[in-house]
Length: 229
Ligand code: ATP
Ligand code: MG
Image (cartoon, rainbow, N blue to C red; front, side):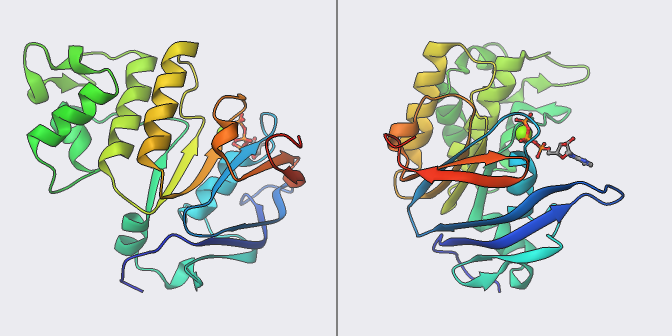
């Protein structure tokens, strides 16, 4: 399928075991999100949250069960259409050896310098623009950026990539409390009409979610609304 996605996301009885491992890290997980619905996924470290998220972007395919967007199974989506359907803020943000512009353009291939600059300002990265602006070189042989700046760059990319589904894996990990509030507010405003899967171990932002799922050892052991859990 090559078309545009609406953003309905369905995970049906999905299980996944890493190649060469005996441990099933995602066990029989089902999640149903209508277009625009928002779900927070909580659970302790190593319980399988990031693995589940990576199944959604087809880093790997599950051995059991099915994932579909708009009722169409993921394997029927073309790579390009899937990339247009989903924005990911991954737990580790990759920075390329390249200019600031090159580090943003992948998120929005037809983006303008004005749009890139605006996104950087929104996430509080305007100090990076001093001196050489978007030509500032990052990575090896360039400006070294801190963990927090790296995170913010990941968020700027997400703001530029306007897809109907937003997947966030601990997007504010390592940021101080106040920055966390600001960044999360920015992301949730951006995602107002989008379908969201938000992995977190913090309690910030949960009141904006329609569903909250608690994962343990690969399984979803509890579901509910904010107040219920
Ligand atoms: P955290 O909160 O620390 O990010 P998580 O819930 O995201 O944890 P995962 O990264 O999904 O957990 O890992 C789930 C399990 O799968 C862990 O036991 C982990 O060691 C294992 N695992 C993760 N990636 C791989 C891999 N590439 N190959 C084999 N095992 C892996
Ligand atoms: Mg993880």
